Image (tube, rainbow, N blue to C red; front, side, top):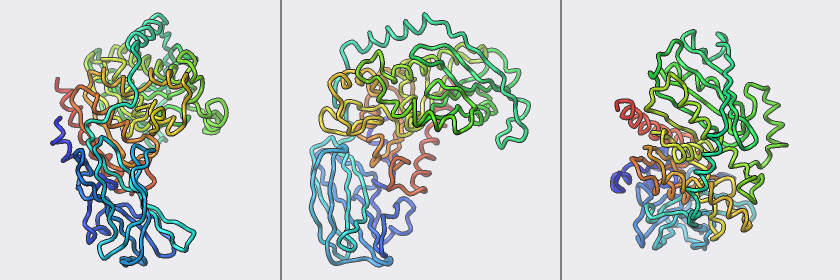
Length: 453
């Protein structure tokens, strides 16, 4: 899809310019932080938040007290590029139409305005707004390893040499459950052997008595954290006449009490993204990615699979895993990646913010060498799938420059939805829900097209 069309599609609270008169009524504008009756918000002057290289970006900051505009005094601000670059800072005088901050940047860059106001000389209220200059030229900060393809070919070869030994244990349908699928669906706990220190672990659901080669497959990946796989999700997919699978990221048992997962999150799996990072052989990410590959292999081995369609979806870490799945296995034909992780992982080496799990943390040379093999940007450029990206322009976990870089490298058909996400504390629920609805609208359209093939 061409950039001109995509610009029409890009909407979001943090990047949406709204006239001051309509700010209070427009659900796309999140409320700023408040104290003692003061509140602060900010907008940009392009409705889609996108700018050409060198084009003037104008942020407008509005300060109110008891819902009345404050037209005197000044507000402070900082403008930060790609999560870490100091672009501009200072103060701006307030007037009847607020305070303005103008920037011209050659780009490509993601800009975050941090508006500040001291209420009582000590306590500060904040608001963040974003804009993107030359977005379709954003690329990863560091090049991929020369042996990237050879490396992953070797991992695939090793994995293929290990039999799956898949064990499917029936999971009873519980009529008392909120998402009871009825007797027409059957579900299984799936455990399969895998490399990387843990098995593939998930749930599979399918319509009962499905015929061979009759069903498309959808696999769902989890956001960050330590969780059981989601049986309600897979049964819902099966009720939609699909093979539905959901895997947990860590190869751990499913269906245990919540305390079991909480304990793992604070002990064995604490900061799991950092485990073994000084070598690809010991990196926790290697096992996670191998489990992704095995999950696709498992789905493709099911006799009910139609042999044509495998859909990968997820948000945050799950979105990143969806990108990895599409990049590592050409049988993935469609994906939806909401604010995906694992993008631009070596960005801190050039003083910028990397995608989760590394952010602004400085990586040593060995760690930087390792993460280049796991960067979703390099994987997605090899994908054959069509896909939908949802990017938060002021996302502070999965930084937008990396997500735009991944989007730009996907060679196939694609849609982009830009809005604040759950990773942004400056996001209104209405804005997030509207962006996610747009994401799913595109995803449904692509899926319908895919199933008609």
